[in-house]
Length: 456
Image (spheres, helix red, strand yellow):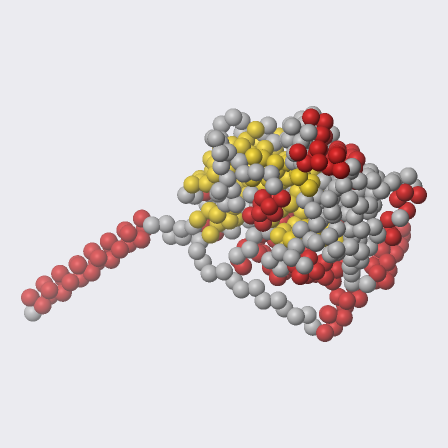
């Protein structure tokens, strides 16, 4: 009996010792390890083979649609303001080489009548701009061809920009209104081998009048589902011109990232001038990190997200800032810019120029904010409670010359991604969406809005 008890004691001791050892091993390992996936992982920031930082806009206009200045004037102004690439995406008119006349739309025949002529570059001007000899600038500006702002007759501002389309695709694309029109445009661009993004969504959801519209579950699902359904739909504009109707689209962007990342797809945030006149060329634009400034690399960078968005104008908001309205358009103040953004383990390190403050945003909330000067700022996510549950982190720089933001750095814990399955609308809902897609519905809605405002 004593021998049996002794044997049981030995076995129990061994079991407890083994359990303790396993517990130590488990506690030594991270309970939920993860990897930071950065769109800037391949960027060479310094040294002989350092990549260039190229300034450009993928959304601008001319008198070939509804702008005040001609194509020749708009292109030359972008060139004068040190742009390295530009897409002229007139409404319902697919962009061609800047020394050619695009397909004309009868809707815009009024332009010459009001002294806004149709005018493109001469062959000599176009060649000089492409090789950098125009005005002895010494640096070329590259045209991004095949751009078109779809739904050119839209009354509800449900606009989508398409890129890299053949010159005979998309001309005169009238488009439906509201939700129906969004999908119709994105599907057309997808079917014709182009890329797209959703333009100024705050304009359609009217977030100026109702800032909480960017948090509305219906709006988030609408845009999120379109981005998930169409691989060629890369994301949304988070900055558009002076952000007059889109001041809260960064918040919508955060909501969309949280919606789509569980499915394994990020939402790329675009920043564009949407310039209709030379006075707004210095409003919002992008800085692409590329080995060389070529159309092929521009397309590749649009898809990878290895670029930054800059704006010179933004309204204050209490969620992610700024604390005060920002408007430094057409000043000599240099815009803030990342000089490196790197990751190692669970740490993110940022270096910048012309910046005063850096803030890190995760899942729609500011998780860390610091002054930044010539010294890099490093955020170790292990010091942030709950960081293992973040879906992404993105970084913003504030300076006297504006705001510059990064794309989302995705937090990947290795878990299996969800599979997106489109839900077919019920028959009555389908009929309602089709009716909302008509001009009659949109005109009636606008009329009712005017009447309500008049008698409010």
